[in-house]
Amino acid sequence: QVQLVESGGGLVQAGGSLRLSCAASGRTFNNSAMAWFRQAPGKEREFVAAINWSGDSTYYADSVKGRFTISRDNAKSTVYLQMNSLKPEDTAVYYCAADEDGVYGSSPYHYDHWGQGTQVTVSS
Image 1 (cartoon, rainbow, N blue to C red):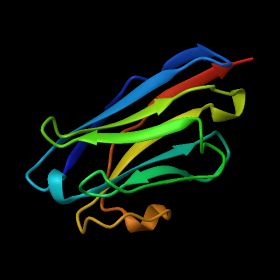
Image 2 (image 1 turned 120 degrees about the vertical axis):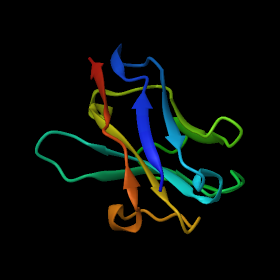
Image 3 (image 1 turned 135 degrees about the vertical axis):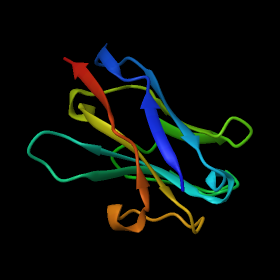
Image 4 (image 1 turned 180 degrees about the vertical axis):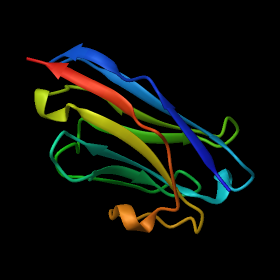
């Protein structure tokens, strides 16, 4: 069982940066693929980025490629999302997700565990 707690959200101006963190508890974190999703009001949950269990393979949505970076520190049981060059359209609640099989995907149905979310607001 993996429990996830996100932090690091907030209000930032367009062009600014934020780093989100997702702290995991549970013995299976090091074997789990991890991902970030986001959901804006009135919209479906959207894939942002994913990373495999070892951290040597990553995958990004086209909308964030080149601006966001996902990484993980298995010693700290934490996954990060560094967000640069933020745009107003990045405004959403950001969720961390885990798949205990260790294989990432872009569908939310792929993931077994979810955090409670952290709000990111980008002002123009």
